[in-house]
Image 1 (spheres, rainbow, N blue to C red):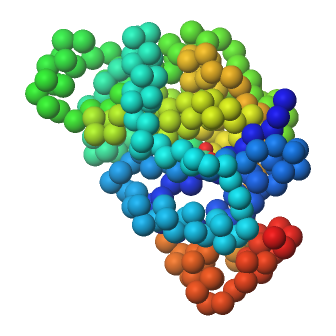
Image 2 (image 1 turned 60 degrees about the vertical axis):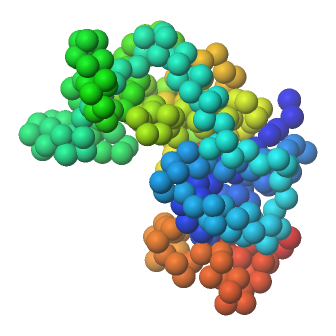
Length: 281
Ligand code: GLU
C-alpha cells in the first residue's frame, strides 16, 4: 500500500522549530517509502485562526524546502462534511448536549476529592449526560450555549475492543475512557479537532499519521471515531517533541524561535533543517 503522510498545522501563529521538525518528519516518512506528502490547514476555530498565519505557514514550509501536493485542504471550507459525520453520531444516539461552563467544571473538579484526570485535566464528570431530552431541548431553544459530547461508555460498548499500531511503540490497546466524554462540536463551531482530523485523514487517504507524542492520547479517541464511522485505520508514528537547549518544548508564544524570525535574522534553510535534525534541502 502506498504511504501517504500529512502535516496539519493550525494557523493560530507562525511555525516554530518544533513544527519544522514535525513537517520534515512527515515528509521524510513519505519520501523514504516512495509515497505522497500532503498538507492540511486545520482552521476550524475561526476565532483563533488568521489567514495571515496560513500564508506565513505556507511560505515557511516552502522556504524549508518542503513540497506538498495541491490543492491544500483547508478545514474551514468543509464544515458541511464534518456536520454530516456529527449527524451520523447523533442519529446513532451517541452524543449529548452539555451546558456546563468552564467555571462549572472548575468548581466541580475542586469540590471532588478524586476527580479522574485525563491528559487535558479533569475528565468530564458527566453532569449533563443524563439530562432529560425535554430539558436539553428547552435550553437549546432558549439559546443557551452548549457543546456536543460523545458518550464514550456507550461508544466503547458499540465498537468493542480496539487497538492501534504506533511505529515506535508497537500495538497499543485503545483505552476509550482515558479521554472521557470528549467535545465533538460546540454551538459556535460545529466540529472539533478530534472529529475533523479523523474525518480528513480518512478522506485524504492518509495511511501513516505522524505527529508529536503530545497527541498520543488523542489517537485513542480517533480510533473510536474511526470504528463508529466505518473509516479505515491508518498506522501511526508519534514522534518525540523537539526541545530547545534548556530542554523546553517550543511554543507559539516564543517569538524568537519562529521560522520567520530565524529567516529574518539571516539563518539559512539548511541551518534550520540541521537544527531540526534534517539534512540540507
Ligand atoms: N492541527 C493540530 C496541531 O496543530 C495537529 C493535528 C494532528 O497532527 O493530528 O496541533
